Amino acid sequence: MPSDYGDEAGEKLFDYLLRFGQDAGKYAMAETANRLSEAFRKARTGISSPVDYRTDEAVSSEAPQWAKLNLKDFADLPQYDSIKEVIDASLDKAGIDHDFYSDKDRTEFLLFKVDDAPDVNDVFESLEHSTQKACEEVMKVRGVTREQIRDMEPLSKKVEAARAASKAVNDREAREIVRNRIETRSL
Image 1 (cartoon, rainbow, N blue to C red):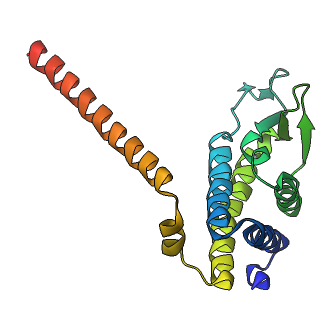
Image 2: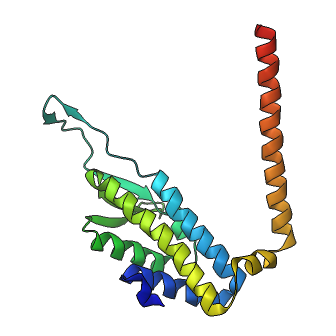
């Protein structure tokens, strides 16, 4: 079970999702796991490789030494402190200097060295995959499949998703029609 992960972060993710699943039900657990996984994925898009500020062979004195990553997507999830502990432990295990910082608006950020951005990205990618793996394990323990959870989804959410997909297709088709008209006129 949790020992299958071979590391503390996997165990903590398993415990986090199991606790949440017991408290809020099967659907809420899967939804939270998806939101957590998506938060890790979105965070990775905010982490880019460090910019090369070198001029000649010297490093510019204006080069930033630290980067910050907004943790709003994580802070909006239940039991944010547990998630923060997982992130902290995983970054410590990877040997990445980091800290958590709250600004005057109480927005929390993860601070890390710019040079460590690729490593932070790797840690978040690993946590994203560990979240999905932990969710699958919890569903096994709870005796439920993703299909059953999908079927438990409220009809209003299914309708909302269908409308969004339909709108995206219509918007894409409308752009294609406009582009074809412009191309036809330019010929």
